[in-house]
Length: 344
Image 1 (cartoon, rainbow, N blue to C red):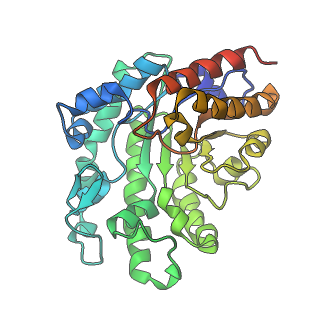
Image 2: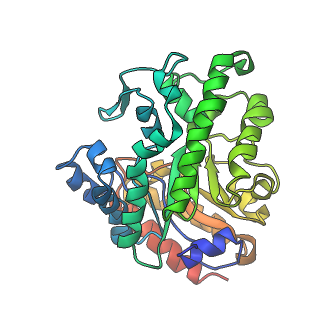
Image 3: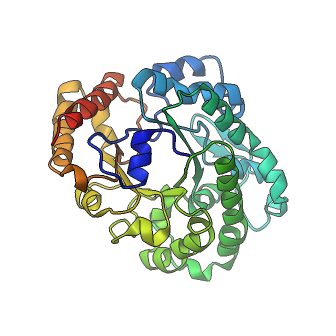
């Protein structure tokens, strides 16, 4: 059940003047509430203690009045369960890299689920603390993104001839996909209204491989299983500008992670939502410079008739950056609501 009315309308493509607003990484390093908690606890402690994780998640709801809260966690914890020795300093590091010899690949799925139980506990606690009119979503890392991090290849711009790499494909399709599928299922059973799949590194895949194999496998084994309950994000997503993308892939929505084509995507969406796509770099700028960017973004959206922006979730093209100005965030949210409420 979708708790937030605006979020429910966006998912169901119902016209509304004011769109729902939330940002990826909205509970993070830019926020003084999070900074104060980090003075007392490590990042891993904040994630693995469900009471602390829920406090972090609701901090930006209380401060900025976002419409939607998101699980506070990290996409890489499944790799820790596989024995890679995940740590943060402050970015992620691994004691071991993923390979065909990784013994954790033979770990029973129920043991991995138990290792990740802190995430579902965090969702349950977050829901208890959230106002009833705020929605709660979960998230997982995309299978390729997990593999890319686990094998230490995130800095490679493109992975070629993957169809010839049978070991990599085995780990990807036979091992990581089931873990992701299980995690989505458990989050949906434990208060997540939908689950986002953050697959940033899938931009490494060759376009033909992505379309003909990877996303097709994703559709058959995840999107179709959790029909209209997942949303997908991939930077430079090759399917982003397909017509009827949410309908074709049984998605609740899509995150629009690039500059060009967003307005056209909003206009043509007739099922589910399109989320985006203000540049997070703009939020880090001095207010007057930020406001120039914001006004341009806002006016482009206001030029779309209400009935033609019915699937819009007003958000960023990626996550909030650590050096973001909190005042800019408050201004963004308040002004979007004010200006859109007055729109025709």
